[in-house]
Image 1: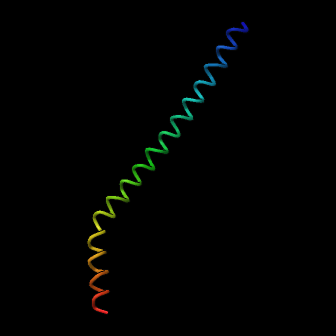
Image 2: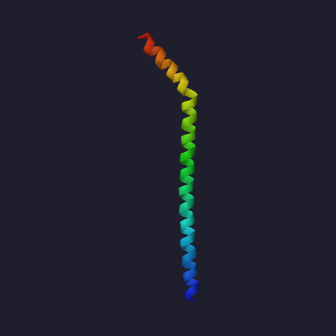
Image 3: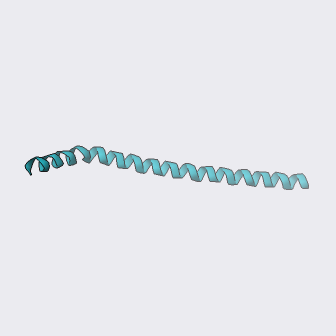
Amino acid sequence: MILCVATQRYLAQKKSLNLRRLIILELNISLGQKLVRYLKMVNAYGPFLNENFYKNFAET
């Protein structure tokens, strides 16, 4: 009986650890996706913004 309780406790701990790992992993993945989206946006608009900035700078 004691062994059974100890095993259940161990499994519960293991499960919560795995859950924590999963949550952390999902957070990292979502942060990574946001970063990728941001970098894509910067790549898409970066040259355009720079051109306009230099044009405006040259005109003044």
